[in-house]
Amino acid sequence: MGYACIVTNCGEGLDYKAMGSIFSGLAQTGAWGCFDEFNRIDVEVLSVVSTQLQTIQTALNLEKARFEFIGKEINIKPSVGFFITMNPGYAGRTELPDNLKALFRPVTMIVPDMMQICEIMLFSEGFNSPRPLAKKMTVLYKLASEQLSKQYHYDFGLRALKAVLVMAGALKREAPEYSEELVLMRALRDMN
Image 1 (cartoon, rainbow, N blue to C red):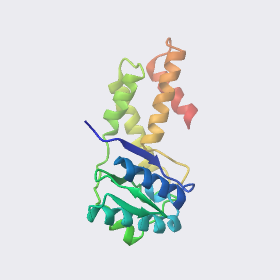
Image 2: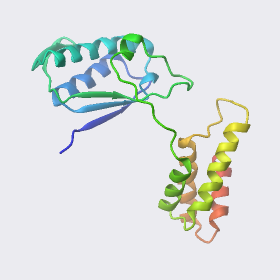
Image 3: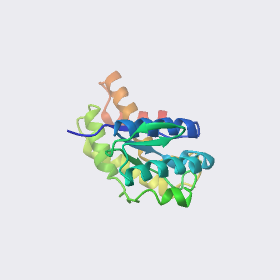
Image 4: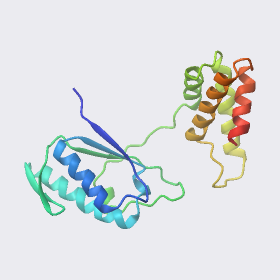
């Protein structure tokens, strides 16, 4: 068996009330919560979120079955877990307050193998010779990110690459008579 893991894509629209409701639901069900791009939440909200998480953590440490949370007495299951992902250095991201940082254990992630991801995506989109195309795409994106000027509207990350590959797959299905190289070039042109 596994645990339910609820993924929440965080942003400026999340306030402390919404976060409190999510935390309350997770605590009562014992599910895990993964808060993606947690540092996109406004810093004012993060300070309240820190207090909310500390309250839950205290109840867990004291092995309580019920505890007071945002004005209500609720049940808590010890299987509850909270995880966050962050992409530091991007525009619109805030630095976490120290009291909130202390509640999480940092784990450094490695850079994904873009060529392998690109090859698998091309294959899943119906391309017959994905390896040489994946090599060309990843070299192009690597060179573009290294040699073009750093501007906020340039994006040569995994999301941008994935969007091009998905579009290439759609174009390939629309016009199967075109060569795969041409389809990929057309997707690149149309996306950028």
